[in-house]
Image (cartoon, rainbow, N blue to C red; front, side, top):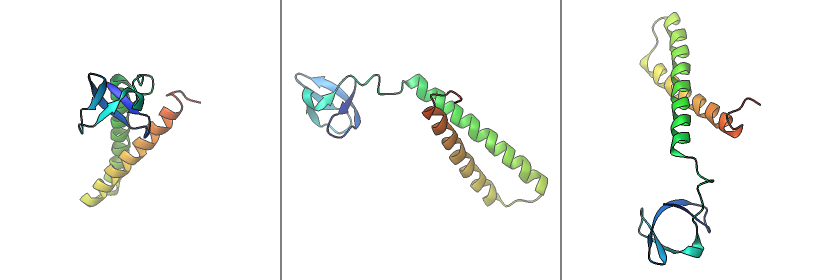
Length: 108
């Protein structure tokens, strides 16, 4: 199950072991009072993560397509420029998704 360490705010995966909880990643043990076990509302569901990642990929593909279309009109373009274009497309897509998530996915 997911839990949040109260002292750090870090989210971890834990398994209950009697009266303690074991961090399945690094083996640390925590007492109940050190963890917030009601983190469902704090965490994005797997479906939401998939949705936003899909939108990120779609945006990056669209941005790259527009940029390469413009490159094709110019003629010979070095391969390095395409790599730069791809990196910029991902950065732009990430910025777009971050802004959409801030607004709850609604146009405000």
